[in-house]
Image (cartoon, rainbow, N blue to C red; front, side, top):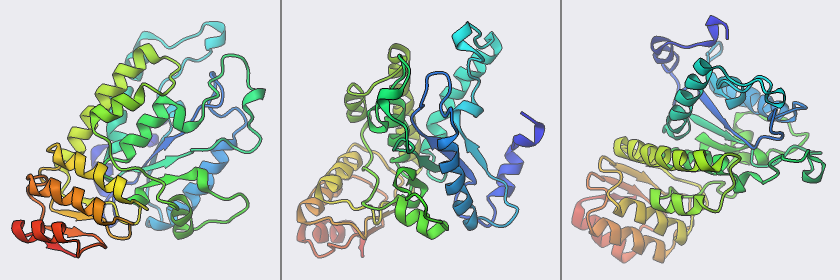
Length: 312
């Protein structure tokens, strides 16, 4: 890669001034062929369309980076003919894998998820040995989605599979379409993540499965350990999702959390009771402000008054 393709820490700090979040995108998508993730450039076109719209929210001339595994990590040059990475490249590849948790889980990076195959891509037409599993059934895609679901606000994890063919997008319309119906699960405890991971497919499951379990647990502890605000507003969550979040908070995650935003969801009495029970047992000990639409639920009102939490 040319020198200008790299950002120093100083460059990155300068690039964040005046904008919300980090100018870093990470792409999550299923490879379409074992030797090349996007042989006909169909996914490239979808990503380019999304990036064009997203750049409207950044100052003109702003530099940004996109992590796309195929171009960002050393790949085997010609595996079909036995040409593989050098030892040096393989070491860099493994080092890169160790950083994936931070790229996808960081609270202020933006994750773009291609959850659907491009038009015209049919599983029955693929070469023998190709992984034809859907996005939600693949181990790495599931992991990347789970990382992105930890502490990010809804607009920072976009489902590009919901983009509509033929529609011209700007920033607002893209975010609206790609977050419709929530588009996002609540965070998972590492134990729950590991259990569900067993149902997912990997091309190299023997090595990848234990790796992603370790990476997920590390990302979970890092991101929740430092989060002071969690914005889960307008994600379409109901009682089940609120109960899952309550379980995460009750585990001792988010010790520094001060503000929790749950407005714009569909959380009823049962979900509020689950949150109240977790708070009563000491979850989120630093919490000062809670935003939720069902703010008159008795148990929740009582525990917020008891702990001095502002309920809006």
